[in-house]
Image (cartoon, rainbow, N blue to C red; front, side, top):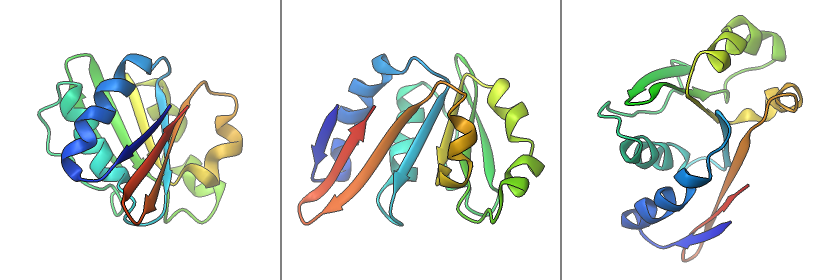
Length: 135
């Protein structure tokens, strides 16, 4: 699925169409710095019924949120320098213990994620806004 948005107010239109398609507990978010990965996550969690304040997990590496269906973990692997660092945070235990795991900058762990069923969203910036691809 591909979406084109021009303003932040259009994110709910994207999340409303993606949520029914979520069949796997892992969602990878890819895009350049400032593309809108955390903004997307804020709108997604709100649409999933979470009342938690969503922020970037850049420094915490993982944030935990609550939803009516259970725990949601939000990762940012941008600062991870090796796969060992990813394992050191206990990522496998997180992935097994949540209704949804949202992983920003998943590239360092992507080979290992091949064994886990997951979805992927790429967000590209353009002169007119954002292009979002969901698969």
